[in-house]
Length: 95
Image 1 (cartoon, rainbow, N blue to C red):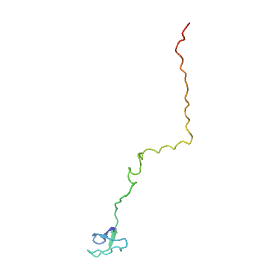
Image 2 (cartoon, rainbow, N blue to C red):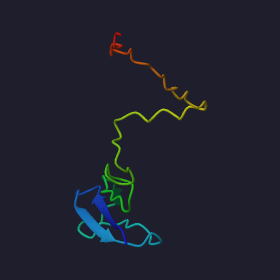
Image 3 (tube, rainbow, N blue to C red):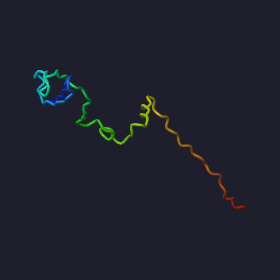
């Protein structure tokens, strides 16, 4: 159940009350009998589950690196081997 904080408009006394959502708001100060108003303040937020931290669901890549380029639709050309003949250095025997 949530905790609500009220402040008296006359004596500025603050009161906390644990109430259900369906309960009606407090209206009368117990100290002086003045009018109470709800005080709204910042609430803490808790993120539960995966996906909220840098290390969750990211794999091994970093978020600062750009995504990889999509694969090419054309097949890359395969290099053809070139046969090179080495010049013969052996001398013919002379007769």
